[in-house]
Amino acid sequence: MSKIFITRKIDDAVIDELKKSFDVEVWDSEDEAVPRDVLLKQAKESHALLTMLSDQIDEELLSDAPHLKVVANMAVGYDNIDVEAAEKAGVIVTNTPDVLTDTTADLAFSLILATARRIPEAADYIKQGEWTSWSPYLLAGRDVHHKTLGIVGMGKIGQAVAKRAAGFDMNILYHTRSRKTEAEEQFGAQYKNLSDLLEKADFVLVLAPLTEETRGMIGAEQFKKMKDSAIFINVGRGPVVDEKSLVDALRNGDIAGAGLDVFEKEPISKEHPLLSMENVVAVPHIGSATTETRYIMMKLAADNIKAVLNGEKPLTRVTR
Ligand code: NAP
Image (cartoon, rainbow, N blue to C red; front, side, top):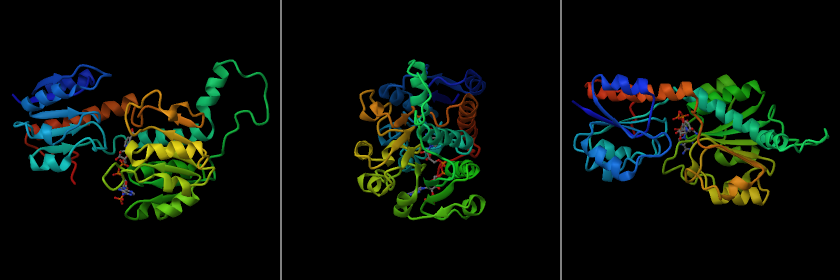
C-alpha cells in the first residue's frame, strides 16, 4: 500500500478519506513544524508528501526518497520546494492555486484599510481606556477611496484586489513582466514600469511570487522612490523585500506606514523593530487563513496526491 506523510495536523475528514486507500502518517501538531530529521526519514519511506510552506523540499531530501512520486504543497506559492530538483528526480509537485484567491485578496485589502485607518492602534486605544474625549484629529488616518493603488505582481490575487479597489474608486496601476489586458479592460488598471508605479502610488502592494528575480526586488532605492505619504503592503513573500531597508524607510519617514502579512524570516522574532512601530500593522501570514479556504486547500492537496498515486493526472501541477 502506498504511504503518504502529512507534515502537519490537518482536518480529520481529509485524512480519513486518504486512509481508505493509503497508509497515512501525520506529524500531529498544529503549531510546530515537523523537525527536519523526521521529515527526511518520512520522505525516505513515503510515496507522497503533503507539505506546508515551512517544509524545505530540497535536493538533500529528494536524493534519498526512492519511492516518492508527489509533493503536494498546501499553498499557491512553492518557494519552499526546489522544483527543478523534483523534476530531475521524477517527482511531481502540486500547489493550491485559485481556491485561495478571494480569501487572500480580502486580507490584502483589509491590510490596506487597517494600516491607512489605523484600526489596530484605535482598537488598542479604546481597550486601554485611553478614550477621554472626541477630538478632531484623534487617530486620524488616511483615505483609501479615490487614491492610487500600485500592485506589483498582478496575477490572480492581484486582480482580485484590483476588483475590490475599483469598488473603492481607486486608480489602479500595476507592474508585472507581461501586460494583463483583461485587468486593464475590467478595472481600468494601467501598466507601469516599477519605477513609475513606486513614484505615483499612494499604496504599494506586493503580490509577486518569490523567485530568484523577485528576491530583494524592493529595497532602499525603491523605498526612496515612493511618496513619503505612501503605505507599503506585502502579502506576497517576505524575501521579495529587503526588510532592513523597509525598517530604515519607516524610521526616516521615506514612507508613512506598512501593512505586512509576510516576513523575511517566519515566524518573525518578537524583538524585531517592525513590531514596535506604531505605523506598522503586522499579521502572521494569514492571507488564506479562513476555515472555509484552508479546508478546501487541504482537500485539493489530498486530491492531487490521490490522483498521482492512482496513476491519474494531478489537478494543479506546478511547472517551471
Ligand atoms: P499568480 O497568479 O501566479 O500571480 C503572480 C503574478 O506575479 C503574475 O501576474 C506574474 O506576472 C507576476 N510576477 C512574477 N514575477 C514577477 C516579476 N519579476 N516582477 C513583477 N511581477 C512578477 O499567483 P497568485 O495566486 O496571484 O499568488 C501570488 C503570490 O502571492 C504567490 O506566489 C504567493 O507567494 C503569494 N501568496 C501569499 C499568501 C499569503 O498568505 N500571504 C497567500 C497566497 C499567495 P508575470 O509572469 O507577467 O510577471
